[in-house]
Length: 210
Image (cartoon, rainbow, N blue to C red; front, side, top):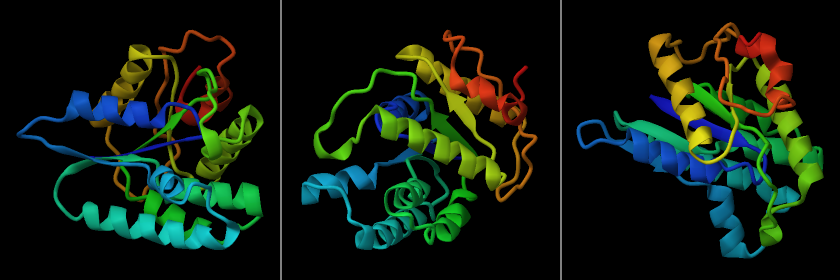
C-alpha cells in the first residue's frame, strides 16, 4: 500500500507521517517513510526555492521516490511532487509542473489531505503565514478534485488526528481501488472532527459525507 500525505504548511504532515508509520510498521510487514524533501532543501540552502529551481526540486523528488518504491514494501510519503507543483503555481504562476506531478500522484493507493484546523506556528523561512496556508489548501483540493484523484481529509489534533488517518486507511483496505483510477466515488466520511465549521464538510459529495 502506498499512502501520500499532502497539505499546506503547518498542518501536521510530518507528525502524522511518523505516527502512521509507528502504528503500521511491523517486522513482517515493513513500511518505509519518505521524508519531506522540500524541508531538507530549505535547511540545506537556508531559504525557499526560487522559481527557476522548482523543476529541479520536483525532478529530484520524482527520482528519489520512484527508486525507493521499486521494492515490494508499503510506503508513506510525507508530501509528494504535487505540493511542489502547487507552490510553483501559487507563488510563480507556473503550471508546467502539474503534468508530471499528477502522473506520479496516481501511483498512490490513498491520498490524505491534512486540514488547516490546527494552530499555525512560525517556522523561520519555510512558512509564509495563515493566509498562504489557506490558499494552498484551497488550491490543493481544487487540483485533486479537478484531476479526479480521491482523497480523505484528516482533521483533529493529537491522537484524534492519527486515528482519523487510521480510520481512512482501514476504510480503504475494506474497499480498495486500483491505482490510476479516475473514479471520484471512493468515499470516506471523517467522523472524528469536533469542529462543526471544519472546511472538509464543503467536500461532502466527493468524500461521501452527509
